[in-house]
Image 1: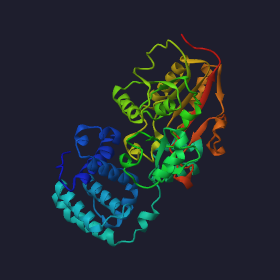
Image 2: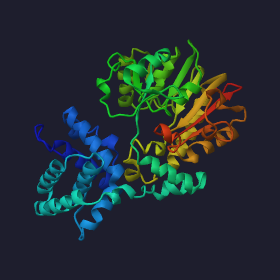
Image 3: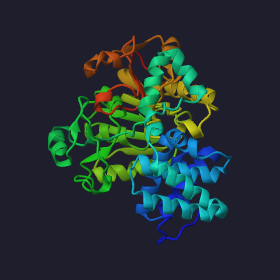
Image 4: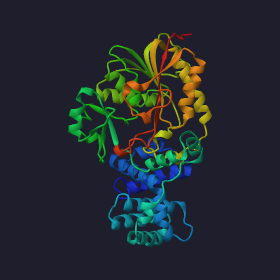
Length: 431
């Protein structure tokens, strides 16, 4: 993918490259946007192309519903992507038809010159048509490897509500560094204060241009993702370990609460992001690049936060590429890794210390079942109720855990899916 920096089609060309790589090559947007061939684009092109790609992935089924009456013969995957991108611009963004159609025709000429006329004719008919097929299209079903598991755990009716929630773009959530200044920053940012303490901005904004960004007064963090660190209930001066720490939102929460934080992650590149975020927010933590499973604990911690690697199925509303790029392969290995990390984390926990285990997954295998199995392996572990958080009843699991899903808080714009469990150990497990 190479585009001239002055090319007016650059954002759409980059968006098409992202879309093709996700849909046809099963690659994640987060991996693609880190590649040199994408990272070389100007910031405006990167931002626009990522927005266009995300919107198209989220509304692809609606675009196909609009296109169906006007595409009577097979077309190449590249041309279908161009049409889906254009229809999304027309109906999701309500962009000016003339500019969208002309851009799509020019894109087609670059990809398949003979298809330019078809693209022009189809899109002109779409601009003149009733948009009811778009508006009435059912939410796309999750892949079977996810949907089957969720149906067994939650029931098909609730799964359908989650699928509908995935079709709505997630708002911007922020965590304020100094919680005493939450109201001040809510006013400055024209944001809503959520019951959990996060700030929520529903409108489209450029994050780096918002008040408070440069001085590190807040950071971007989904409201659900901000809950686990709060449930650790750290006190100033306590020694706390953040396992699998990147990208650092939870590390910053713990440091802002006054804890002495050790942030450990296996990836030096990911820890570099933690370091950058700490510098911007003027917070400090001891950063360690290491494999937690091979590192020998030499002392215990008052609190441990384990945000374990997982399928990330709770973040589909923010990452609409996940259903296209993941197929469930590797789940067994993930479950084994989560159990091993839990066992390892327990060896670092002082007697009476608190361990918070969380995953941004909707799968009970990665949440409730992991905790149940861990308690069987470690009978002295106590599952502490999250009642201190004053959370709604439908957020709670039967044993006091939190089970957050995208269909919750519909009146406020939803949240990511998360599982959170708080554990305490009566004894030390140091080897």
